[in-house]
Image 1 (cartoon, protein in one colour):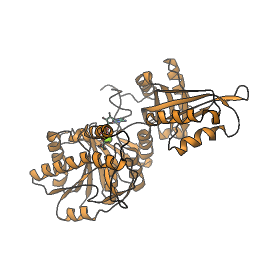
Image 2 (spheres, rainbow, N blue to C red):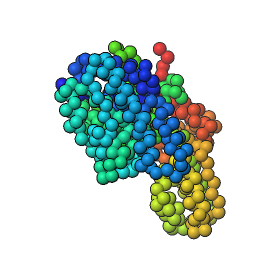
Image 3 (cartoon, rainbow, N blue to C red):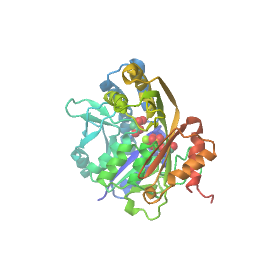
Length: 413
Ligand code: ADP
Ligand code: ASP
Ligand code: MG
């Protein structure tokens, strides 16, 4: 008998009607003979509400209690879906993370899954039960405390469960019918992809396409789990297959650029008139690293007078204030004149395995953006992607420009 993991995100379980609709999707797969583990998110908006409550309770909250609170949203949907399935005549039970157990690290709020003990779920399969697993959560074995996996983490729960039960497939049901060439809510001409390579999906997700959590794609790639992104809003009796995330070798027709991603979660910091001497980059970036602040793009301007230089880097908006405060504190020791910062920036990226064998792909983008009067603040490139940092006001124009430039626009039927 084949095994299947079906994951349903927040909008797919937003209310009881939608949960009943999810139950019909699950029934279809059960009726066609699959053993099914379902992974659910909290109802849409629920996790945001829980996070806001925690922050309201205390700005300096205990991260273990944050996890105890925010994990509760998934507990509710798992129970409700199990009830909805039972009402359709299916045997089903809910599993919270600690009951499975899904073992995680103790990095509360951003924990990683370390192991999943699948025997309980598998015994349930032998009894003919559907396992309804609360996504986004697990338990740290050492302390026995509940831990959550970071926002969007139910995707990762789903792929990890699929790997643990050796599922034939992991279907991620969401509010769009697949992975698109860019966010279809921003570019109406975005095209749905039949297939996308793991490496490309990994870059798309890490560069801002929130359709899948990055870690879920890593796990799918490492464990070779065939993963589909598809719509829970399709008729449960006649669903479409969605987009398959698969090995590069399984992609028949590929373009140089597969997709455009963008991230608004960026902040830029510029240090002016730094002393231009060996060790200067270390004096800036070591304290940031020690404070756990991740830095992404870095530009050091070649010095005009051999004495002073400017340094620009980007970080996440969450780390921005901390990075500025820390560097301002160390101003005398580092030796710069002024610090300028902005959160009004966005990173736009183009991704495609075809870039490996084509030169000048990024150069075309620089020209096209300049033709639209968009100024580029920073650039990074690597084997299968490049990114530009621009003013946030130009986000949509830049994404659409690159989307058209690389021939990704949907042709009207
Ligand atoms: P869920 O609640 O089901 O986990 P998410 O909101 O996390 O759903 O992810 C789905 C959303 O991802 C879509 O509604 C869409 O706006 C967004 N998205 C961003 N980039 C893409 C893309 N390239 N393809 C499809 N969806 C994308
Ligand atoms: N409910 C969690 C969140 O909103 C996890 C998820 O939806 O994947 O981040
Ligand atoms: Mg999500």
